[in-house]
Amino acid sequence: MARIVQFVQVEMTAMAKVTSARLTSVNESIREAIRELAAVREEGRLQMHHFSLPAMQRWNEFEAELDALEEHIGRSGARTLDAVMARTRELSTAVRQFLRRQGASAKHRLDTKVRFVMTPKVVGATPVDDLNHAARIMWEGDFGMVPVTQPDGSLVGVITDRDVCMAAYTRGQALTGVPIDVAMARTVFTCSPDDTVYQVLDLMREHRVRRVPVVDDAGRLVGVVTLADLVRHVDSLGDDAACSFLVATLSAISEPRRSDSLPPSAAAAE
Image 1 (tube, rainbow, N blue to C red):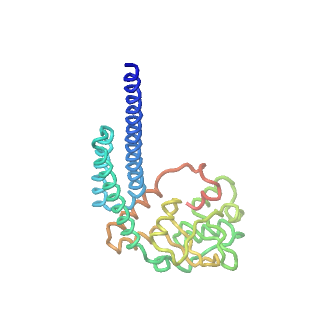
Image 2: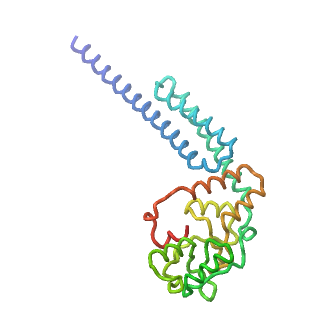
Image 3: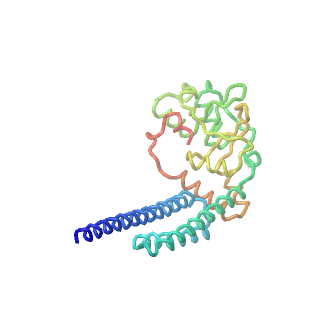
């Protein structure tokens, strides 16, 4: 009898270990599925600003499917796990293919080179010119920003209408007595004439700027591309994906932000 009891105990222990191992495997598979769905959802939300209205509607459908699958995963047991994992892989693949198509569509439609949409032969100033000179250029040319260059044409900064106003207010001096280099932004986001409209819009969106100086390989100023230039270009395309990307860029630029969260040299480039 003692041997039988011992045998049963050994078998029960072995079965318990197998059951535990299976449960561990099931739980890990469930966690893997949840992580995969969360990753796919995050990828989509990071690219939502590219979507046209029809694409946005399709993304909402995908999100509903992701919600339903996540809820189902929480109730799944070992017997339905294979089906759940198969559906997870299927839905993840479909969403990622959709996201690739959306990104490719905007990039394709916005592949025009900056040189064809920028404003060339821009009037600039030098660091030793005074703020009155910069203000006069802005007034006469209806500009909001003046590039600051050295005599050889190399870009060293930019000054905006906001910079001029803030310098006049904080210093309490006549504009003729304040050199540009004390108020200009030295950290400037630039692009190349061979960059695409898509790349410049992405740059504007990331750094929340409306005007981007265009420089050659030697760092010399060759033009300026503004949000207004890009609006006119995108409007001429008549493409939903391109318009959606433009709208998302404008939305990102327009979001309020605290000026004290920026380094002083960057705040002037807005």
